[in-house]
Length: 178
Image (cartoon, rainbow, N blue to C red):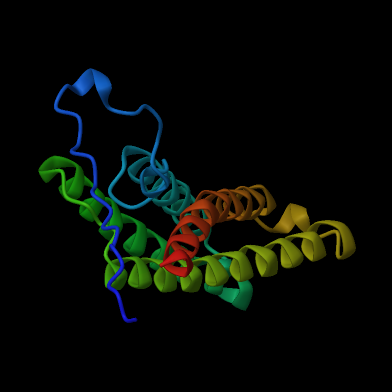
């Protein structure tokens, strides 16, 4: 009446020992631009360089402290430089010791930090662009100010944000996929 039935237990195939037999392709965890990859390091270096040059150009003008938006841009690019430089050091370490940076806490920290710095950098670049347009087009007092430097610093801040956006999206996607 209660006869036992045979149970099927799946047996995993052993991994191939020959490296030629390994399946080709990129695993989803190893997307370029993720933390601990060469693409991620490249994005961090680009973020650092663009933010650093924007900071240097804006700080080279004598009248940036008189406008709050430009002070905000300087503060945001300082934070962007510090964040990108520190994560570039972490990426270099991970590449040298071949360590994976995809544990839950690290990815969560990277995603939150990238989100905060992306919001600050984008807000600062937008506010600086608005003030630059006001000075140049509406008030026509560009001859009295350093409009070229303001425009350059604003454009570089946007470029830093463009380099930061893929890092944020990849980290956020990786965090949400877990």
